Length: 332
Image (tube, rainbow, N blue to C red):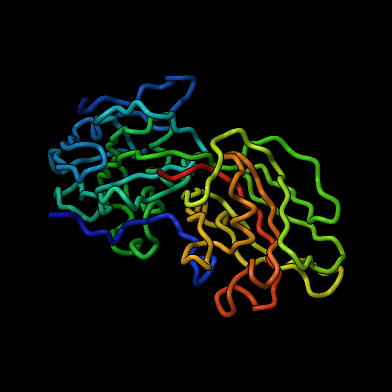
């Protein structure tokens, strides 16, 4: 039986209606591979977990019950991958199955449909699943044994009250893809009259808007120039973004509308225009297509043909939007 998807935490999609919408069982993670040091080691509990089936398909999970773990989560590699190395701060797409460590009962999982995956930031202190991916490779299948309190942050917040925090769970996770955690390109010269972007250490951007009227045409600027793959129309771009509206009174601060940085979970943007039944306003689409992964782009999109249709934007219909977008990867 396919497990329930009630714990699934799928990446956000920027839609038209609104902007913010070979098996090696029991092999422990090997510290220091490629200069990377995992936060968790394999242990007596995680080494007992087996999960048969191909990575990316629903596994058959088995272990002796009850399975008991100490005060720190354990991680063991069930199937080693040979894809890109996953580092702390990266974003990772994954499939998962959760099993009760005391009874062996399935508690849910992802859909394993090859289309929609869960996504999280790697290396967060309160997220055992995210931390388990550190220094692993894409294509790996891992066994994570943890108390629920240290694992639940990886899953839908609505599931948090469904399992006792002290309960031990086994999570079998498949690393499907990895992306940058923030734009890593080189700073570019600023454009006169454009908002100034300042970026925190963790990647979160802030802006200062000049005391001037909002532009009446869509405009964009490259803030950081990346050197990754070039985005094309119809790609699915993995991004972090923040969004403001241009102040209507000169000298006022811009109004923050929303940001993916608040949840540490990046979004996936379908690079097609709203007018074509796609995912982003034309002004933003024009700013992103042709840019490279690793870049940070600022786009100013006024109301009109390049903007949101009436009633479909996250702010007033006459709002001029300011986007700051980090291009983290392309979802295949």
